Length: 526
Image 1 (cartoon, helix red, strand yellow):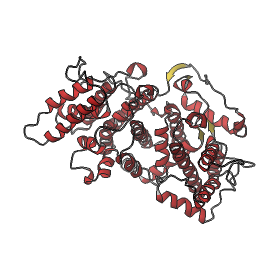
Image 2: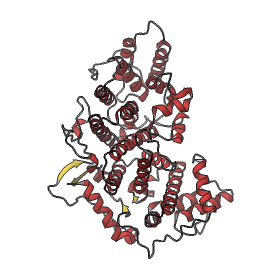
Image 3: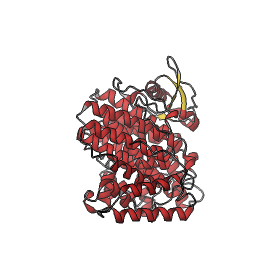
Image 4: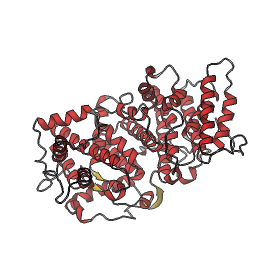
């Protein structure tokens, strides 16, 4: 299944704006009405959607999904053998990336690839050769996503609502017999690594391509971590490697939608990864992600960087991060790991998040004169503060938050579980659970001189332990160089993978042709 040769379109090249959307909408409707007719000819519709595709520099998601589905389904008979199925998914990825360029829309467009690849993982997770190739492809996909996020200006004006309902577009891929018929169930089938609340959000409409791209990125992100969890590495070593990679990836993507989706999914007790991991590994992975989202003060989430976003968006993300910090501390405390609880509490207390919450709440309340502040610096103190404001009739908490999680937090507060004892002053955190302040600028995130990103990131965590109390004085400085033997220029995400032929973005990535003898790609985080 090779990407089609590009040529000058004739039928739709004059259509712009609403005329183009109308033509696309009508073409999709005609396809739906013809699917079950005995005279259905997919080649006719393939030609139509190809013409529509070529009429736009940045084709819409609907066009790419429908066209790639027609090509993918008609290219050959259904694959049964593991390697054949993997190859088909890899070719689908090549096809979609050749159609969509490099933008936020492009990230959202690879959702069918994630769906198909997930099926291969679940069916053949015991096949070592297949899993090795899957891991390589996942690295390629992550590299592609990273490049797309570095070129988001291409999406200006292209983040609106879809022409057709998402459920309808999903049906082209999952078929009419899957998902038990309901909208949420069908969409959930197509996004197997998203939690129910995220699925409900994107199923209800009113979301943009950016939010969808963030959700797809979370799926690939979790897929990568799940595959690494299955490698049988010693727990402590694996925890450090996964945490390092996760922190590097979040820093490299610098994407609010991705981070927000990931944080909200951590409010759910069980990550949606049980088809790939056993329950013990799933709990372990959630603990790794707690470290990645709490122990690092990401610069792209600072007030200066997010000030342009709508207040509602900022408030929802800030409260979700607060609840995750609180939940992580409680789980660590209940598990007897008080050192980790101290580390989480310390990280929250001196992070951008605590200041951001105060600014957002006072902006919502409209207080004049002395600012309204919580009575303490712990996540528990902030939650009590917000709940007190709610009791006064001031709506702060996002209605979209899970009722179950909200009740859990409230129950813990009523039970008298006190986090105030976990103070920054006079208490030491575990040197393996250190607070790292990301102060790098966006351009510096994309290319840096590094020999081993894994070692350098661990060094950053260690260095942060000795400067934690000085963080508010701006000790963290932009670093253009890191120590290493034999320095070389690399992209932030430099996966060791097979290079897909025909991809328009391959010149920007540095891939190894041989993945068969590679160790864990986790050593090269973004």
